[in-house]
Structure formats: structure tokens, C-alpha cells
Amino acid sequence: MSVAERVSPWEWIRRLQRQMEREADEIFRSIKEFEARTGCIIPLHDLVESGDEVILSVDLPGVIKEDITLEVTETQVTLEAPCRTPLPSSKLGRRYLLRIDMPTELDTSTVKARLQNGVLEVRALKKRARGTKIKVE
Amino acid sequence: MSVRAEIYDRISDAGGKVILQGFPDVGLVGSITVTYLVDQLQLREVGYVDSEALPPITTIRDSEVKELIRIYEGRTFIVFLSEIPIPSNLIRPLATAMIKWAREKNVGRIYCLTGLAEPNRLEIETPKIFITGSNGRLVDELADRLEAEALREGFVAGINAELVKQGARMGYDVGVLLAQSHYNYPDPGAAAQLLLKMPNLIDEQVDVNPLLQSAEMVRMQLRDLMRRTSDTMGVMQKSKELELPPVYR
Image (cartoon, rainbow over all chains, first blue to last red; front, side, top):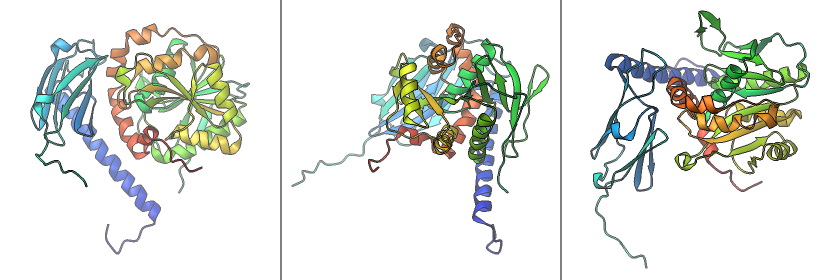
């Protein structure tokens, strides 16, 4: 927006909203394009940092735990799993694939994963920078 | 220019029936619940909502054009459902239009069906139902009738918040039934708990077993809607529902 162009605050909010909608739509389109190109499904997922921990949860309906391939490095989590549920559309692939960068480095020796009711939960402690405990007087 | 919401319908007098509102929201709990009711009870489509705030999208089902926000009528209730998350700029005008319409059509009450984000949902076998609403009398009555817990402290966001707020201002009964659910994942298990309350809420019994048996398919089918809804929930500060209000009165 140029300095000379004066718009009301409401118009400015509307423009901002439209821009956010366009960006969200762009992300959505790239997901669908990836799925169409690779024949893989990007599952719904959520990444949360909680204190010393990073928790990744992934919605995997139609998956059994024995089928999951999970790889965790200090900076990335990758999972693949076939979906055993008959799918609602032939447009969808039959395999989940998720590769996600971590917001902070992980201590891979602490990784724990469980699958419950079709939701995979991966927990890992953040890699700590070495520090010294100081006694407060 | 302000956004308007117009309701077009074939109902002349609702005769005290109640509205069940299940717009896309936390865990798509309301959407799953009302869609299942429409499907199981084979409800009749009787109207729709239109607004310039709705995107230029139309749904095609069995080669038929369907409106995005539709109204169905049952024996004791009227359903409002939506194919898309309600755009944030439509929330207030839609809530106003729904309450005005409900009064004009002699609708008894509005019940909003939704999810209550529960971070520990994985540990919960049977989600609990919480009740809030436009006045304390209604909340206590519903909590008692449905054997549910009254939500004494917390935030409600989005269309449910607007309906409750406007209901409180206008002296109209708006109740909200919240089932503990996943925030970002479609949660048919939570919807099933709401459906089990239907006999005491609207005097309708539905078998939830087909829903639970097809839960994985439902979750797959609703993946895209959940993704879109998550984006919208972020705009309307839906995560605020995870917080407690400050103590000042």
C-alpha cells in the first residue's frame, strides 16, 4: 500500500483478512498438489512445545502401529504408514507421509511414541545447551 | 458496507421446535453430530442462509446443487449446518439473523453443539459434556436434564460465543453443549457422546454404532474441512477456550 493511498481502518482490516485467506488457500493448494503428485496423504498434525518437551501428534485413521515407519533426527521427524481404511475418494493415495522440521533440536535418546485410537503421539526432550546450576543466595 | 446474512426458508411457524446448530468448529463435533442426525433421520431440507461474505463456492451432491449453509427440519427440531467454516466477518450478522429468525418463526430455543478442546483427549475414553448458555437458569436446567456438567468458568469463541452473547442481551435462550474433543482432528467419538444426549434434548433416539464403526472413514472424509476450520479458528482466537478468565468480576 502506498503512503499516498489513504484507506479507512476497516478497509485495511478487510485487506489484511483477504491476504490471510489467500495465504491459507495457497498452503491448502500446495498440500493438495503434493498429495495428487505423490499419491501420499499428508495427515493432520499438531506440533507443541511444552516446557522441555516437544510433542508431535498426528491423526492417522486406518493405521496399525506395526505398519508405522518413524524416523526421528535432531531436527526432523519423518513418518510413513499405509492406510488400511477404504478411502472415501479414489483421488486419495493409500499411504500417509509426513516430514516435519522441528522448532528446536531434539535429544533423540528420549523419543517416545505411542498410537492410541488412531492418533500417533511422539514426545521428545529438547536438546539442552550445557549450563551451570547457580545457587541463589 | 456491512455484511448481511439472509435466511431463506419454507417454515411458516416452527411451533416451539428448537434449533440445533452444528457449524464447523473444534473437532468438527457439531458438524458430525448434526450431519449424522440429518442422515439417520432423513431430514427434509427446508432452507438456506445466503451472504455476500460466503465464498463463491457451490456444493454438488448427486448432481444437485447444494447451498453452503443449509437448514433441515425434523419432528421436534431444526438443523443449521454448514459445508465450510463460518467466515469471521459473517459470525456476528449470522448470529443476529438466526436469533431474529428464531423469534419470528416461534423457535423455542437454540442449542449449539460443539467440541471443547481437551489437550489430554487421548487419555479420555468417554468424553464429558459441558453446558453453557445465555443464562444461568437454562444452564442449570440443561445440566440437570442431560446429566452434564455446567461450565462455570471459561471462554467460548466464534459463532457459539456470538449466539450466547446476543441471546443473553435479547433475553433469548441459547444453550451450548460442549463435548471434550480433539482440537484439530475430527472427533466422531465426541460427537457420539452428544448424540447419546439427544433423547433428553430433542426426544429423538439415534443409534450411534454406525457412526463409531465408520469413525475412521469419517475422519478421512473430514480431513480437508478440519484443515480449513483450523485456519478459521486461529483467526477467531478459538484457542482462548483453553484458558481460564482472569479473576476480576
